[in-house]
Amino acid sequence: MTALPRRIIKETQRLMQEPVPGISAVPDESNARYFHVIVTGPEDSPFEGGLFKLELFLPEDYPMSAPKVRFITKIYHPNIDRLGRICLDILKDKWSPALQIRTVLLSIQALLSAPNPDDPLANDVAELWKVNEVEAIRNAKEWTRRYAMDN
Amino acid sequence: MSEEEEYDSDMDYSDNDCGYADYYNVADDCDVEIVDPSKMDVEYFVFECLTVEEVERLLNESVESLSNSVQITPSLAKVLLHSHKWCVQDIVLKYRGDSASLLVVSKIKPSRPPAPQTSTHHACDVCMLSHEADNCCGLACGHLFCNLCWSMHFEVQIAQGISTGIACMAQNCEVLAPEDFVLNLLSRPKLREKYQQFAFCDYVQSHPELRFCPGPNCQVVVRAKEPCAKRVICTACSTVFCCKHDFCWMCLGDWKTHGSEYYECSRFKENPNIAQESVLVQAREALKKYLHYYERFEYQQAQLEAEIENLSWKVERAETTHRGELENQMDVAEKRRGTLLKDFLKA
Image 1 (cartoon, rainbow over the protein chains, first blue to last red):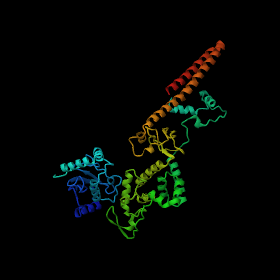
Image 2: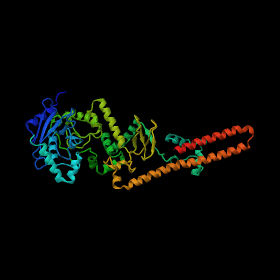
Image 3: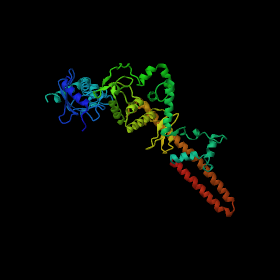
Image 4: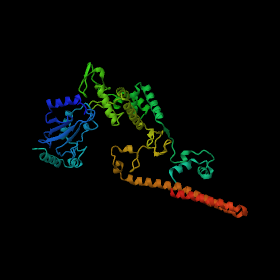
């Protein structure tokens, strides 16, 4: 394995020294490109009070290519599917090498506050979110309580 | 009868043996020997098959013409031509009207003017290292990054097949990297070659008169001044294809009008009558094809009858010595016409 680029070292140091509120990202002991992430559910969202585990991997050509991020904790959200894959433009075609791990995780946290059922990844969830938002939010709260609390 | 045979026989109209010349001259009802090919073959239209070098020459003519008329670099002229369907006059008009907004819309300049950079050192936002200003560069948007990061960015983009669409590395910045900027920072010859190949493909695809031959491993580009849904036969690999780029099976309309709905035809969804219309169109086409062959079938059958009558008359009148030969001729004529008629029935 090639030496870790200076940028990854710097980003990791900064993540440890000045953590983003509500987000923790810790590199794996055996792989400095693999991060164990925990995002807290934003206030005033159906995910409030939940702790969501994610995994983040920096590919070989990072930062020219976007990091690979996935939810490990089950979540009821129109832009996150059953496998935890996330539909977010900056992880795909809107990626810029000037973005960082912290900006990506902040965007994911923002996605929890503002679900976008018009650009769905989980179709059944998005459909319910559009036709019966009250019930969809009830489901999201229920899933948060069941899967993202007391673990 | 296969497409090719039909094509051949249409081309052979000067051959009297075939009977087509008589047929068409009678149909045209005129004495002029040269028949307008567009009337002879409904699929006829003017196109030429070009090699890569010929296409490059053609594109370069447009690039030169634009860069001379509005005084911009050939690289920027390419960006403009690519985003404006290679229409030089259109770009020149827009440039003379409002050059600033044309350059913004074409992603050559940013919508807001960049902040001036004066320091001798610059921290690259991508590798997070400090570099001398000489080792950094940027596009018209003023976002500076070090040369090494730029070339790595290009490498990753080219590996994904992106060339003319490579943008600035800054977040939310849409300014495109023109060809000279990319090539200045790419040193590996293989990568430069790949970049130029991808860009060439993009240019051909954005040019309304050009179309790649879809034949496997065929390098030919077909040029038609008025691309329409007509048959093209590649001179290099004989692949037969339709010159219109793509059409929808549902409504037979241009695929480009279908937007991002790849899996269903929105025109059909909005107006289910289109399906009926399309069935009608198909039925009409089928009828046209039937009539096309029927007319020829009928003509050949009449000819056969006339020939047999003519020959049997001759046979009756002939002396016994010539009889065998004439009967043989009659037999041959009958067989020949018979085969022809069977062919029409198959078609």
